[in-house]
Image 1 (tube, one colour):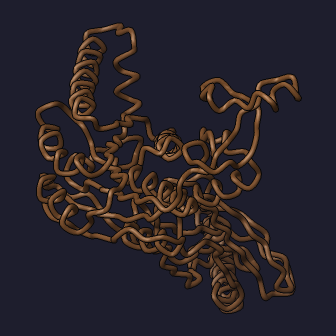
Image 2 (image 1 turned 30 degrees about the horizontal axis):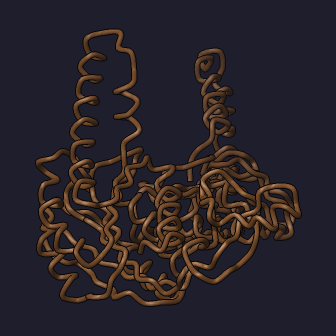
Length: 439
């Protein structure tokens, strides 16, 4: 409960006659009577103003599983049990580590008769794991406006933040509509490297000339290409480095969190292509291992393994991790290594350990580039601080390119993309390898 400015003003008004008390004793009597009436009115106002949880109900509509780095909607629905309208101020309490779009505090008028009123906002989780929404707080004036009732509606709710589930739903929707180009993915269906004819389509630059169907081209008066079904049931193993280099933040999220989103997206696409998908997370030790298997259920097993995994401040032992993998899984596979390449020296461990994998498997190394570093290296500095920042950024990019080139010389394919295009670039590369039967 809190006193309002109206009550404070009334109390101050009652004190004015005291300044004129020397003009007549009756003024003191008037002041006492006035204050008695004001106190009685205040007490009556308190007693007749019900507590929030007695007249207001609140529900929060939010998914129990939120998506990391995505905008997740939250709706708060309130109802008033009174017969008359009730103006209130309401505030929701999302987890403090979430970023917000919109406001969690609103002034509303609740209509009487238990009719619902709602407001909404969006939360953007920047960390995986378990989080709790707090209670919903409300405030409203009494009937006479002398006090404000403050209270909370019990609304605590636990939610889990998973890798970006919304992206997989978006992919599925666009794939059904044939609009994957909207998210930078060139093809949803694996075509090209197999031997079984599938369909005809118009020629696009980059198609192999040997696949042009000249008879169909002559009939239609334009170049037509034959498409073939790619081979199925290939093996994909996702290797996630969870060491100290993956703690580095990029655009408010750790590099590991972007990598987890991308790994889940690739697992989802590969499972939809009838491939077997597996996972191994490691740093100084192997933290989790899921052998490759088919089906969408395997994607959910990978999801459950990744939703609360965090990078740790330890050095990654690539040799031990790769040795563990080759003893656990011997079938030829596409190995997708998610790590970071800071400089040639720190990446030497990866280069030295890669031979354990490349003799049997095809290896792709995926890293997240920092758009801020790219921007700093391309800016025209206007002062000494700008010159220094540009020099540092240029040096970082140079050393990163050296590390990438060292891997390329060992026959390792590399993808170094900013966060917004990482998933699309990796999926396109996977589709290309599959279409060309290079897995």
